[in-house]
Image (cartoon, rainbow, N blue to C red; front, side, top):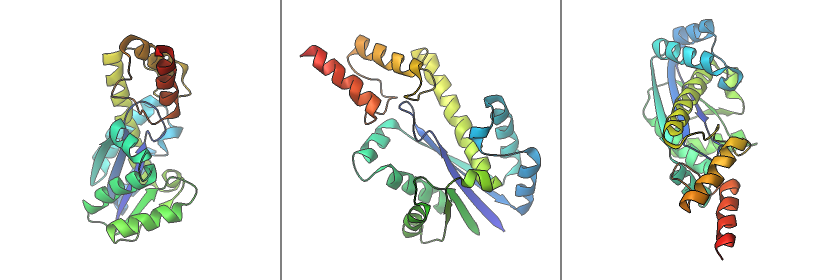
Length: 211
């Protein structure tokens, strides 16, 4: 049996892309994933995630990473919604693999609705559950690879822009960066999701100041 696990990292931050990962594994691969200690990436320290990510790549049959830009996210939020965009990207990953069972970590409070959306997009039955990254090692592995890649991107941004914090609106360093950048450049950088409330408020504040 071949299993495809899919999860994302970076759905909520105001800065940076959302990264979606698909991991293909057979029963032997899953046994090895359990042995090396994969689990939900949010429950792991950054160094441990990085260490496990390299082991995961050696253990699994194959994997795929997709990066969804802030601009594409903004278009989705202002259009048919972020869940729809996430489903389309996961459906693309599903179309690229030969598997027996697909399992995805579903967003929102109605995972069955997300699973139905994936079925309509792919024509295949998909197990869609909340917290699938805590229940299925193959989804945990996808969670780890997605999170490590997003962390790498945030570090790359830091080398370009300086201290941007974690990229989350709850991070004071991130908010300070956004406000300072706005004051200095009159706009937000392309790495920012403009549809997020934090961005809208900062853009609105400058507009009011200039009037």
